[in-house]
Image (cartoon, rainbow, N blue to C red; front, side, top):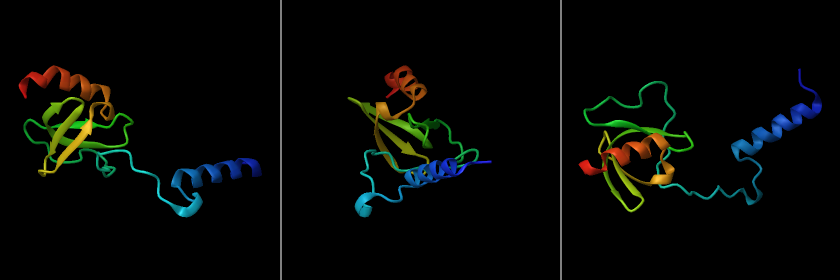
Length: 107
């Protein structure tokens, strides 16, 4: 199984991952304008004509939405429930950036 040192390493990694034991107990700074998505099994929302799945570059979130516009590096999406999402190109997966490049003339 694990040695005592292995368990300590595993425990410290878990504490670090969960954010426990932070000095002062302050929450980490938020750097993303994309709302945190709920982890899902399967399809996150009913498919709607014209919508597609969008994935964060780090694969931490997936959302079904419509492409609305691209202005400079700001991408505007509309979720299937009407919620508007604004993010930057670099926060989207490479596949999503490629899709935007191929479809930006349709805006």
